[in-house]
Image 1 (cartoon, rainbow, N blue to C red):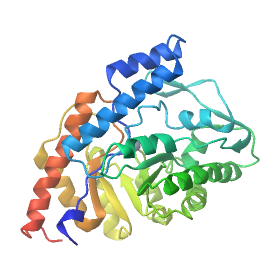
Image 2: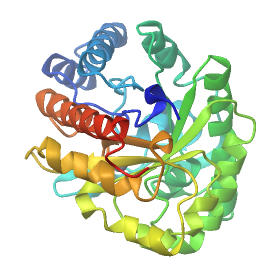
Image 3: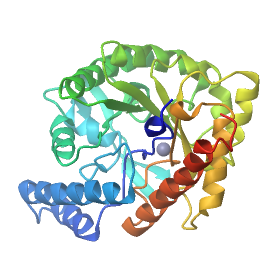
Image 4: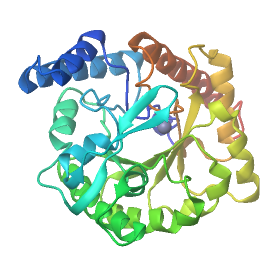
Length: 330
Ligand SMILES: [Zn+2]
């Protein structure tokens, strides 16, 4: 273990969209701004977020998902076999069109590769490739085309695999395949595992899956069989109680550990966040533990996204210094 590969800091994927982009997206939705003009502003915002992450001092960057709205609907719009469904309530007053799998799924062309290449061209630091996993795609869609949920999940896995392999060929060192719905139906965990195996089978990149709000205890330790190198977990919002599960069944992967809550405007203190890292170090060694915010920051204003990420970096510096002095047992 060397000092430069311990406690690498990162983020989950999405950041707040700047006001000019939010406005442009609304104008585009009303037919008042062309697609090319919108893409130009998405690229500008991506560049700004890359520079901001470098300035904050994060180690593994993301493109910030300036081009995405919802993490499932975005891909559903780009895939063959999907059609738009009716409005359903997500939470609170937020509604979205739940997409419908209405025909044979296929990927007409790469969906994220150009964004990855653009973001990676802006920085020497690694940028993660970012996809939504097949089980979450299934769970957040209606399935009207495949006889069983398993068959739909495996068909989705095939199109996500094609995208992941294109990112791999494009040089992504990290590919994150998010499965926030993996604990929605614990009895279907085996389907999520089988589908992820199709996606990751041929990848050279380090693979990651983000799992966030829900009953993690219901899928632990079974989720350790999800075929990815790293699980990316919300912990701060749960006051780190999921770590207790690892007293009984050791954690066997790399862990990206959420040390700031993204559901509150309040900012954690650096000391509090550093304590979160120390808790994680009881279960995962420093070369396999990656501090980051609990979840994507797209619901937070830009300034709050930045402030939360700064706390992650500052807290990590504190613990790195302790480790260098051997003050924390590794
Ligand atoms: Zn999340």
